[in-house]
Image (cartoon, rainbow over all chains, first blue to last red; front, side, top):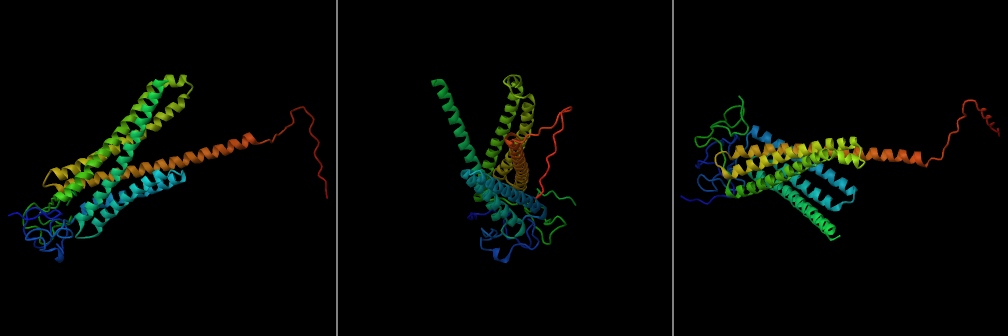
Amino acid sequence: MNQPQPPYGHQPGGGVQPGPQPGGHPLGPTPSAMGSGGPGMPAGYGGLGYEFTHPQNSIIDKAATWAKGLAIMLFIEAFLQLVNMNLLMVLVYVAVGVSFWKAGASMRSVVETQGHDVPHLMEALSQVGTALLIRLILTGIAVAFLVLGVAIGVAVFLAS
Amino acid sequence: MEHNPYHPPGPGGGWAGGPAPGGWPGGLGGSYEFSPFENHTIGSTGRRASLWGIVALISGVLVLGAMGAVLVLRGELVAQGLEPNWITIAVVAMAPFALVNLAIGGLYMGAGRALKQVVDTEGNDVEHMLQALDKLANAFRLEVIVSIVGVLLGFGLGFTMAFLQIDLDDVVESDATFDLPQPGEAQPEPVEEETP
């Protein structure tokens, strides 16, 4: 029997989940999360998501701490670039720093809240992806300028 | 009882301290499979992490190559007038930068690979996800440490250069001369101060 897949994942095996989930939380799913996704299916966003255990939360918390630490260092480097009047790099550092900060905040929410672990984790991964994308674009632009500079230098050398 | 944080708890094992009441009546014991929507986000981030890891690895390899080139051409550089000590200092200074880039590249690539496994495999999504998050945490930590060292070195170098510059300016611009009597010369007469 085909049932529409919710946007958020599910625990394999199907079936209505009586009692607490083996994913970690002893109190089980919240009453508002029961039943709206069809028999045996989670209720989508904010529904029967996975709850990470304490040992798993410790890993996520470590990632959250260092993501925020990296964001702070990027903000400091942005300030130093501001002192050097390099406004473009200020924008880049601030943008990457904000993404890492949001990723850290979302990971912290996974640890400190219940019922929305997976959506928070997806938000965190999305922000990490954004930060890495900004870095990749900047690196690509720098490499392009470097190649262009070398090509112009070689052309000038050959022309002379 | 030791519990591997990467593995989801077994049936009835919701807490590290013991089984949760009720537990799971059957199935795969607490595993979670991400949906295609979630896998899209995970896969995208995994690809970017792998790509950034490759960029960092290439940076590290290029720096190692530059170090090797400097060492190979050391004789010619010295003949050009460069101080041998400065050449050695430059090579030594580049070594940590190369090693850190290689380490960061390896961590990001590992995280990208783990995220890719979340998408490509079934049954161990949570384990792979936590492996990826662990590697990302270590990569972030290494970047923070490198940033702190870089900022401190930059400040230290800047202050040192500023301090030396001020000192040199005072020595160069000063017109003060101190004519000390040479041995055997007559001592200068002391200047009498006029009393008001």
